[in-house]
Length: 479
Image 1 (tube, rainbow, N blue to C red):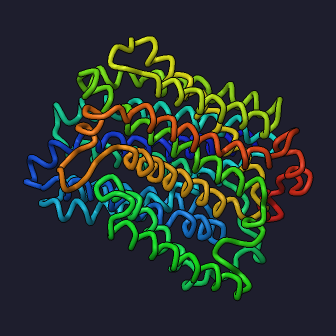
Image 2: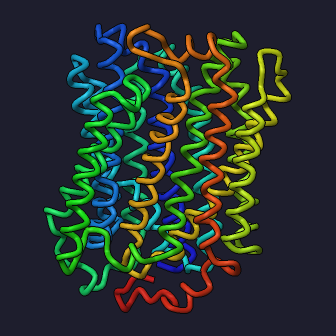
């Protein structure tokens, strides 16, 4: 297979794989109310259809990337996407909410397998100095899928019922599997295919699951509640045990070459902080728009639409800026736009007009697009040779932990207590908490300027390309 053909097929498989995950998450939000009604489920049970998936994904992303580095990313992508489709079909046939929760968790396992592989395919198919453009296309596609999800979900649920949103995954997944099988990329060299230690992998998965579970529970319990403190303590203890274990073994689950890579670790921190700021802001702003401004869900979605539009339109611009100005300047500009957008949202009041709201969301979307393209391009391009999968898994982990952390921070700024039975909407209506909460989130995003200063000034992949050399499929090595 020629180089351009391999690149095009890898890009199609990567984009389609990323889009099916993004669509699944946003479509489900529309389907959950109807699902609750038809299955006679409680609110807590319906929430677990999302939480179970999130826990499985967050816990297994790094492990999945490591397995891809060892056994080949096309193979992991095929297994992941076909398993994702099978679980989706099972959910569509589920007789009770218990089955839905169990199968959603299983779907999260397969989602974890496919996500790092979609990024690793780009690193395998493209030279390091040209990976920025496909990363920008992938980012735009995620924005399109996120925006289309609620609309598609609304149409499917209205005309075919909630089960249709899961059936639609099946044919899409089969197409992705066919594309992946057609891609021919280099296989891992033998020296990079060491046996993966189960104790380290288990400790990492358990630590991440405990952390995400604790963060997801903060909006309901608060930071000082026993479940939250216990969850954070368990996560810290497991993380300590993981570090101690990894130092004693020759082949840790997060390879030392990755852990010591400054561009990779800095990009992880940038993604965690900025996505935390954005999703925390969306948590606050959604209630503000509906319960303070009195907008219906459709109008609320239209108010937020500039964020998605600028994510889609801004990604190619960010890719060009990355190639011209390098990762440090581009990431810094993106972070400043995120901070500016969050600050603009903090100034909104009950009399705010649509242009003011739309402008703030647009600036936030442009900033997030710039940050995502820069951080993802840096991570993929600067991944140590042979470790594109584990790096992709770390990147996706940051994209899962960051939003959970941001929402936890935002909810803690609201005067909510279980004793009074307050909700987020009650808190925003009863106290001027929206502005301060968004300013705190802006400060959280601004912290990303510190790791951004560690990125390189010039060409994002010059050194990587020089070290890794050109792609030589016949040699059987990763580029």
